Length: 276
Image 1: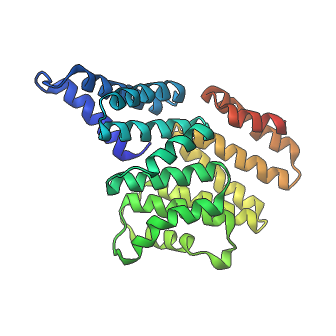
Image 2: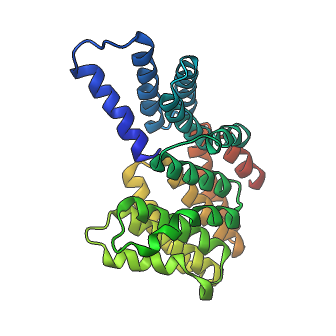
């Protein structure tokens, strides 16, 4: 979930706990409670419960034509739908958001959500073209902040899936940005490892790719990032499949399946079970 929405919801919790009696109608504080509750469930990987709360917030804000609350609730709802891989519903809400007037920050978030949807549907070229709308504006910037570094990381990962090494643009820019930036967060270095694993796989350097993914896996385990852990296992299984190491492939798939079952991620459960 975006940092913007997370901060928004957290601020609402603080406001409800520390301020004097709220002079607004009860429905507004109720909408804020739905958003806050949804955020808590999302952080706990309980995406179904998060979806329910964000949907309730959306309905509540729509009932009083509160445009800001409606947009924030819909963006959060879209995040939870993507986590649940409900592409049809996600596309419906994305289409509504794309036709609404929003501020710059929300417009950026909508572009990122569309990129994520296309990525999840494995439409990598389309996803890269979508996020490039944000990246082209970075050409004149001397310093890259963490938000923009996230954009570069996403573009670099997509590029590593669709382009040949000789044609890399965003991968190179991402490497350069990491070298120039002080105190780089570990997650950005780990993202580069996964990008380099993609490149190594394309070059049939399978032991190198597996080594990089094992390093990334160690980080995600330390952070308790279930979806990323499962994704690493699935990527490792695919590499083992390329080498016809089927026993190792099955081991990784079964580990990924255990996590996907915990997440109630039926989309990925079905994909894995077809491979077992």
